[in-house]
Every structure is written in C-alpha cells, then in structure tokens.
Length: 329
Length: 259
Image 1 (cartoon, one colour):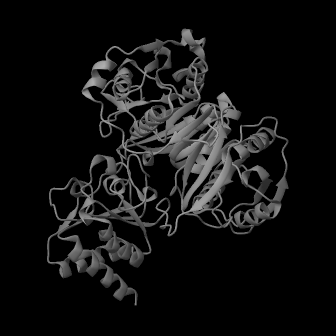
Image 2 (cartoon, chains in turn orange, purple):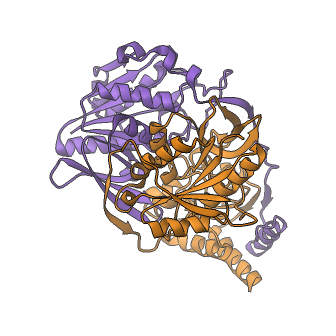
Image 3 (spheres, helix red, strand yellow):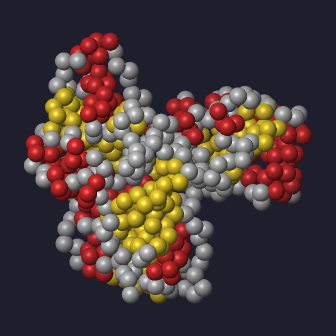
C-alpha cells in the first residue's frame, strides 16, 4: 500500500478547521481512494483540549486524525513553533503526500517544514489528481493565462493547495482522533507574539468567499464603498478592492485583490467601477462568473467579463441590492 | 543596521510566458517583483532613521541586474548578483539553498524578503531560507521597527482580522507586504550614483556549491503538460436604463444559479 495522504488543518480564531482545511481533507480523501492509501488529518495547536476539539471537528471529514499539542504556538508565531514537531511526525510515519493550504499561515508552515524535510515541494496547486502512482498538481499561472500540470520527481511530496480545489464534503462516517507526541529533534528560533490586535470591524474574508463584490476607483471615495458593502451583504458575499483604492485608504489591504494582494477564485465576481488593469486581472481572472458594472464601455474588464452593465454604478448598484433583497423577502 | 534585501527579477506582469523547455521565459524583459520594492523602501527608511546600509541580493540570469540597478538608484549601497548557467530551472529548494549560502557571506542584522512573487506565487522561499539559516522569521509585515532596546526587531504581522505584533532578536528574516508603503522613485542624482555602485557577481563556485546539486536537474517537480484555460464566451453587454439593466443582471445570475 502506498504511503498515506495527509491534510494539515488550519484553525480559525474559534479553533475550528477553516473552509480551506475542510477542502484539503476532502481532497486527501479523494486522492487516498484513487491511490488505495490511507487518508489522515493532522491538527496542530496549543492545549490538549483545543486540539482534541479541533480534531473531533476535523474527523467529520477524515477517517484518522492525529493531534499535536504544541504549547509554543499560543504566544509565538505558529510556523516556527509547530514545524519541528510536525517534521518529526512526518519523518516517523512517512506519508506519501502532505497537503498544506496555500494561505499565509500555510505558506509559512510549509516553508519551515520544507527546510527541515527532504521532500519535493509543489506550490500554488489549484487541483490535485492521482495519476500513475503519483500526485499530479494543476497550477493556474501567469494570472490565469496558463494552466500547467506538474508531478514530483521524488516519491514524497509536500503540496500547497489554494482555496477552491474541491468542494468540502463531510465523510460518510466520522473518524477517530488520536493524540500523538513525536520527539522533535530540531528546533527553529521562536518569534514571540507581544500583542494580538483585532481590527474594530473586520470585514468578511475574501480568501474563500463564494461571492465577491469588488470596488475600484469608480466608487469615488471611502463613502462610495457603502453601496458595495450593501450589495455584498445582499448577496452573502465579501467585499474586495483594487490596489488603487487600498492605497487611497478607502478600504483595508486585507480586501485587496491582485498582483500584490490576494488571488481569488469565487463562483461570482462582481467588479464595480473597476477598469480591469493587468495588476487586478491577475488576481481574479479565474473566477467562475465575472460581472462588471462600469461607465466606460472600453474598459479592459469588458474583454474578460461574462456580463457587463454600462452605466452609473450609483444608479445601478443600489437598485440591484434592493431587487435582490426583494427577491429574498 | 545592515539590511540585506532579497530581490527577484520577474517577467513583466502580463508578459509572462513559458519557454520551449517549459520553464518561465526570463529573456523577455524583467523587473523587480512588486512586493520586493516595498521591502526595499522599508529597508531604506530604516537605515536612514537608524544608520546602516542596504545590500541588495538577487539570484537570476544576467538580465536580473536591471532590477538591482533600480534599487541602487533608490538608495541601496551595493548589490550582489548570484548568477550561474547551472541555476537555470531552479526550484524553491535550490533558490533557498543558494540564497542561504550567499547570505552567510554577508554581514547583516536583518534580511528582508517580499511576500509572494508574481511569477511563481509560491510564498515558501522566505520561511525556507529562515529555517536553513536558523534565523527568526517574521512574516507578512505591515510595519517594521527596532525594539525598545535596539537589539530586537518588531514586526506587525497582518492577519485576517487585525495584526500580531511580533518581536525577535536580530539577526532575523522579515517578509513584508505592500502595506509597508509606496516605494520611492529614484532621483536623478540616485540614478547617476547607481552607475558607479558595485554589483558583485557571484558564481556557484564562489559560493562553494557544486553545480550538480542545483538547478533543473535536481528540481523537486517537473511540468508534464501545459494548456490554455478554457476561453470565456465573450461578454453580454447591457446598456439599458438602470431598472431594466438590474432585471437583466438578476435573470443572468439566477440562470447561473448564483442567487
């Protein structure tokens, strides 16, 4: 039997596996079925009760869950604190594939892990299939203009997977949760968290949102984002933005989509007052459906949208929000 | 404060293509990776406020020197360009290994790296490098400041709902984001001065790295196929009055089961 397929869980602020973690678990299950291997989830966190609770939640998706209590992650940057223990566990059990989410925390963890292990590292995975006794990783590259498929050149691989690779689905029956304590042989320098500061009103995350309503310069100013927020709320989506409006201070960087912001792939991307410059396009071009509302019929976004409404966004967006709300009522 | 700023010369965004060897074509015009210019700016500001110098470090083909020249014009004191034909087709492992070897030959208090590169989108080289060098790793920085007693560095790490204030003793590796602030434009004087600044070119032999241990031959993955994404059908353009347009948007979204 080939080595197991592992999914490393990332936990949210409430200690529950994130949607990305649920997708990784679903992906691991599918790959394991194709490979004839075991699928295992790994949960890392501070405190036995915390990892047990997260492990139980993750067991909804996978037959076997291993939990690691890494006390250092409570008040230190998590990647360096957790990577040595996880590396020890990987060395001990030799899974064929370790799946890590391509989120900021996931990339930090994967990089630290890669420095401790001798594995093929494949990044930026949009989808993973099992082909000829190895994982084949599909990547969307160059801002969505090219799709490549890559395979590892050695037997053991670490694969970073972006949000949206599969639709998360619970397993038929919940799995078992086992606490493990691998003996870490190395350490990485710890970085202390002096303070954790929460933003006053954190916006919904764009990372794994199904619907994103994004605003650009066309919204005119910070107040203009009011109509964007209302529409996002009516659609149950998150608010996105272009770099220009983030630079202008109209909205937080966490919502920025594009070259130096986030790359997203929602089912619906509604671009409002966004011209569609290349730096923005590379962050959203692979979205399922793209709808643009713009005054300029010659804006670049017309070239790669599915539906374009030409007109004044302040006349159209509030009416659209009202119509959606009336439809839901 | 001596700061080494890592710079990746990437294909100009929008012009990227694969060569016949299925590797990123780097002969078609290169520029400094967008995120690297923010860390470059942050490094210059720190050295201006607290003393010290900025050294740029890149690994890449001959054309990568252009990206260094701009950083020198912005105010970096010197640059190191690791270049060797054997490095073509390098993966993240080789990149981290070679950069680690180069950094070990430099004197520094801090190493700066930008978040994701626009060509690879991996985001793993910086933490990988920190692990190889045994340096504390402070990532996704939105602000970088020396700690109260001057022996530590403090970094605000952006999170989904705010930030964590991180602190570590120097030397350390800091990865930064766009929130650090707009990079300056090189002044005419800076551009003139940059012409006389040194760009040291180091080969693998200079770093004591055997050529057969790096590059495409030892890459952890290989591309087996490439394809163009399915084309979009072309946009339906709606030009009617707002009420009619809104009804058409609703019908469109409903037909696609998005609402």
